[in-house]
Length: 521
Image 1 (cartoon, one colour):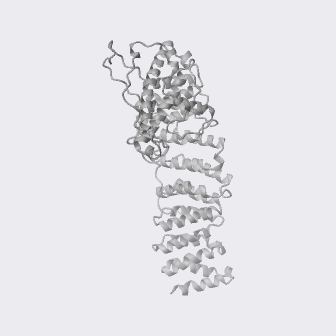
Image 2 (image 1 turned 45 degrees about the vertical axis):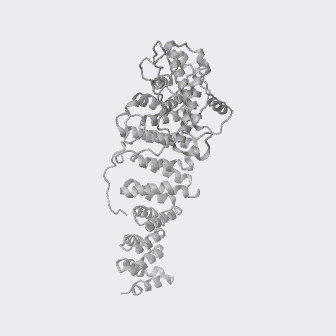
Image 3 (image 1 turned 30 degrees about the vertical axis):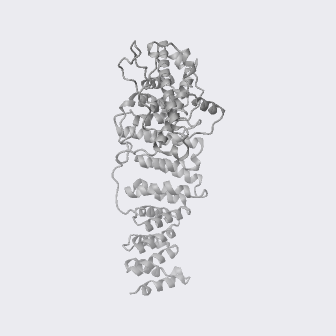
C-alpha cells in the first residue's frame, strides 16, 4: 500500500482534534517503521507529532523512533534524530538523553551535529535529567560513547546560560564526576578537570580547594613513589599540572610540595618517562618551583628545606682546582645547568622565607663557606653569559627576536637574570629572601614597586657585592669561565602538551574492566 494510503489518513484523523479516540490510527503510524522508505520518513515525523496524546503507547513509540534512528537510509536516520527531543517529556527525558548520548558514536558529521543540537535542546528543558543520561553512558557505555560524551561535556557546558547551569546542576555535575574519576585515563582526567574548573560554583576559594583535594586523591600522594615506573611518574606529573593553576595565597600547595621534597627530589636522577624527548627532571623542577610560591605551613620544613638545599648543591659546582702556574689542574670545567638551578634556587628562596635562619643557624660554618664559594663561582659564570646574551640581542627588535635562536637567547637571559637576583639575596648578611622574580617560562606580571626594584637588579652585570664579605678563597679564586650554557629545553612550558598516561583506565590508570556492549536504550 502506498504511504498516503497507510499513514496519511491516520494523520488526518489524529489532526482533526478527536485524538483520544484514535489509538488505532497512532498504532498504524507506529507500524509504518516496518514499511518502505517513504513510509518510514512519514513515520519519523508523525510519531513524535502525536506522541504526547498516547502515554500508554510511549514505550512503543520511543522504540519505533529508535528503529528509525538506526535505519540504513541516512536521511531517515537524520529525520528521526532531529525529532527525538519531542519525546523528552517527564520521565522519558533521561531515557532520551541516554539514547542521544549513545548516538554520539555516529561517524556521519551531519548526523553527529544533529545529535549535539538535540542534546543541547533537551539540556535547556531539564539539565539534570540530560546529565543523568550522559553520565549513565560515561559510566557504563562503550568506549567510543564514553569518550564522546566526555568531550561533549567539556566543550558544550561552558556555552550554556546561567539559568540552565544553576548551582544545583553544578553540584550534580561535581557529584557524578567524582564517581567517574574513580576510574579514568590520564586524558579523561584532564578533560574532567577542565569541566569542573569551568563551573561557576567552583571558582571560589572553597571550590578551588575542593578541586585540589580531588587532584590530590587522583595523584595518590599516600602511595610509595616508584621513580622507575613511567606510569607512576607520568600520573604524578599529570595530576600536578592540573593542580598548579588552582594554587593561590588562599589555596595552598603544601601537600604537593611536601611530596615532591620527600619522595621525588631524592629520586630525581632515577625518574623515567614514556614521553620521548622530555627532560623529566627539568619538568619536575619547574612544577616544584611554581608550587613553592603557594606553600603553606609545612610540618617538616627544616628537613624538606635540607633536601632541597642538598639537591641545589648538586647543580652548584665548586670551581676547578688550579695548579701553581694558574692553569687548570687537569680537571674538566664544570657545566652550569642554568635551567635546573633557576628552579631549585627559586624553590629554595620561596621555602627559605619560612625559615630565614636556615643558612646561618642550621648549617655549620664549613658548609656555609662551601655554599658561598659555589654561589660566587656560579655568579661569575652568570656574568659571562649575561654579557654574551645581551651583546647577541643588542639592537634586535620585532621580527628579529622571533627567530628560534633569538627566542632561546631571550629566555636564557631571563633565566640568568633570575638566578643573579636570587644569588644576590643569599649573599646578604644575613641572607635575604625579599626579592621577587618571575620564572623564565611564566608571563611577566605588572610590576609593583618591589618587583621594579627586583627587575632593576636583573640589569646589573656586576657580581654580588656581598661576595667580598664571604670567606676568602685560595688559589682557586682565579676565575675561568665554566663550559656549558643553559639547558636546551628552554621553550615555553605547557601543562597539557606532554604525553598522557599509558594503558587504559583504572585506579592505577589501567584497565576499566569489562562492560556490556551493544544497544542498551
